[in-house]
Every structure is written in C-alpha cells, then in structure tokens.
Image (cartoon, rainbow, N blue to C red; front, side):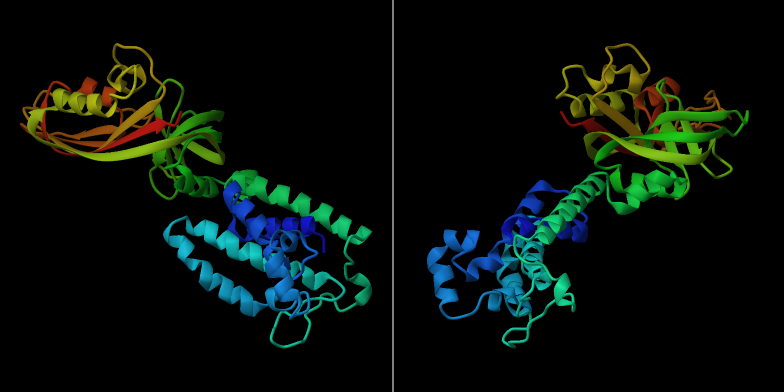
Length: 373
C-alpha cells in the first residue's frame, strides 16, 4: 500500500475514533502511520531510518512484527510517558496512528502477520479478487474515498462532533441545550430560535445571544438590546421554542470569582471589583452600557454576570418591577426592614440601577466572559 494511502487511512479513522479535528493530533497520527513500514528499506520511513530498516528486513519479512498487535501493545506502553508532558489526545493520536497505519495493510493481497509471532496472515476480504494491489486503480479509488471521509470527519468534528451536527440539523431544543452545556465555557454562542411568544402567541424566528442554561430544558438569552428571555418548553418561558440551532460566535475565556458583602455599600463593592477585573481593557467594563446601562463608551469585548442572594438592609421602600414578557434577572422577597434579592446572571447595570442605593450582605458569584483577541 502506498504511503499516502496509509496516511489517509490513519488520519481518517483517528479523527473518527477520537472525535477530533485538532490539527496537531491529526499530524501526529499521519506521521505515526508510517512507522510500521520501518521494517523495509524501500518505504519512505525505511529510507529515512536506513540502518534500522535494514537491520529488521535482514531478519524478518515485511509486514510481520511491526504490523502486529504485539508491537502495537509495546508501542502503546512505551509511549505512555508522553501523557506526562503533553495532552493525552496527542498520545492517543500517536497510538491510533500507528495501529491504523499497519491495519490498512490487511486489505492488501498479502495481508499482515497481525498475530506475530504466529506466521498466520490476517487478510481482508476473503475473496482475493477484492484485495488491493499497491498502486493499482483500486487503491487510488480507495484513497479518493478516504480523503473524502477525512474531510467530512474533520468538518463534523470542527463543528462539535457527530451528535452536535445531528442536533443542529434537527434543531431540537434538547439537543441545542446539550450543545450549549458543552461549548458555553469555550465559545460565545448564539441561538437561532424558531418558536412563539408565550404571551402574544406571535411567531418568532430570530437569533439571540446565549447567557447560560437555566435547567435541562431552558436557556437564558438576550436580544441585541440586552433584554433577557427564558427560552425553552417550560411554563415559565417567555419564548416557547420549536427549533433551536446553536452557533459559535467567538472563542472566549471565562473567569469566575466570589464577591462577599457584609453590610457594605453595594455600588462601591461591585464597582471596585469590576474595575480590577476590567483593568486590561482600554475602555473599562465599568463604563460599558451593555453591562451597566449607564454612561460610557461601548465595549463588546467583555460580559459580566452576577448570581447569588443578597440581604438588603433598610429596604422598606425598595420595590422592584416585575415583567411577564421578559425574564427578570433580579427578583425580590420583601420584608419589613430587610429584603432578599435573588440574582441570576444579572448585569452589573441592573444591579446598580435597582439596588445601588442600598447596603447589602451576601455572596455573589461573578462570571466574567471575555472574547479572545
């Protein structure tokens, strides 16, 4: 079998087996696919390592020991220390690349000694007429098919894998939420939603930015104006979705910190925290109207969300608006002198606009999402 066919076979099936489109991993698999043919000086890698290939071919026939499960097992164990200094994915690609490199030869006329030291040859298929001859038209046809499958596999895995691609085609809300759970920590996501408004029953077909999943059935999203909605199939949703397709907008980094308050000025505490977290931006996130809803230059590089429960003091005059046509990220349980505010992915702007004049105690989880540049 030609070296290029070995490469295509190994690359294709490594991509499928690992569900990856990682170019480094696939390059490793492609290189490793040549290693089994080090047992002959006529091969590409044999000519490169001529002393080793001549040593082996003088003692053993071609496609014997290096094309066996025995040496594959030894190769697997010998290369395992790679996982201590590199990604396990790269080691897996190396091992699979080697295995698929020699396994491709089982489809040739002479087969391989897969069960070495047994001299029995593993040959597929049983009909000799259907076996491949090196450089034949049949092998070139197989090579074309392998390249097509390799491109398809890389495309599918680049989009998140077979399951994600299948879910994207069907547009099922359950599959979309699963995709969000997989990608939300690595990508800024949008959802192309087809459904209806739960209040007016008007049809909706629009893209929304995803903030986070709320449960296994619903997502929290926002439109271009920053208005938040609950989307899914539960009774609490403002948008009932029949189809959802998830799109990756940009890679992100996510940082999560805790903010503790002990009867402290809420405005000053949040402002001080976010000023530190946003100090690496030319325009501070503090001044972003998208997050604050107040004065300042527009910034689209960072998004900040606050979640948790706060005890608000001297809150006898505190009243928060409620809406049936949108999702309230801040809700209030009032009391005689204190109140309890629950925040779910609330923007700093909303917190300051509604609660900024009060002192509070509690614990907030601060999630800062930044686009990679």
